[in-house]
Image (cartoon, rainbow, N blue to C red):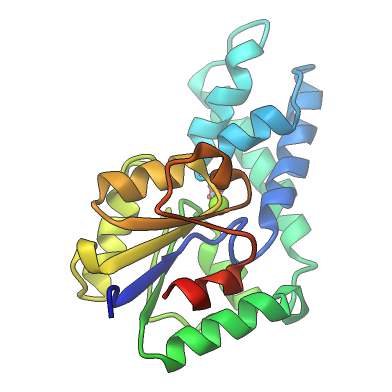
Length: 211
Ligand code: BG6
Ligand code: MG
């Protein structure tokens, strides 16, 4: 087998929490009278909470103290987590479920590589709390994608060399992180537009053909 491990981004790959991030940030942007649209939102994919806020504030007509920034980031997280409350195993699509189960049966190590500090909560909500061999997320890294740290940690957790790992990502920053980690990548959604990934997927089960 060319690869021994598959490292999945979470938001926008396993589930559609990317839309919840959008809705929560939109409320913060509206509070601050900042323009926020899908184009800006796509720049937040894979980017940590505080770095996302800095991107949103690029067009803010004023300045915020670090304490105010932390307050807005916390407020966004409260809105986001209230949206996550509604999540359940029915939010896992048949395509994603089928792909994960089949890859596990084929003997791949499966890991999560997410920038989110809410990753474990989301996986529990989806009924995937015990499914993956390893979880590398926003709680074990200090640098956000496009830095490769989150994927390097995932590869160490499953004890597979980077060159035997493939990353699945919906974020351009995530594809850049995979390249920096010396890993192949499969892009889905917005990340396919980057033209930088090893493979482009229309749906997650396309992986079953590639791998
Ligand atoms: C990533 C999302 O998965 O997690 C980003 O793509 C988000 O949009 C980042 O900012 C951090 O998430 P959280 O849940 O820690 O605020
Ligand atoms: Mg993502």
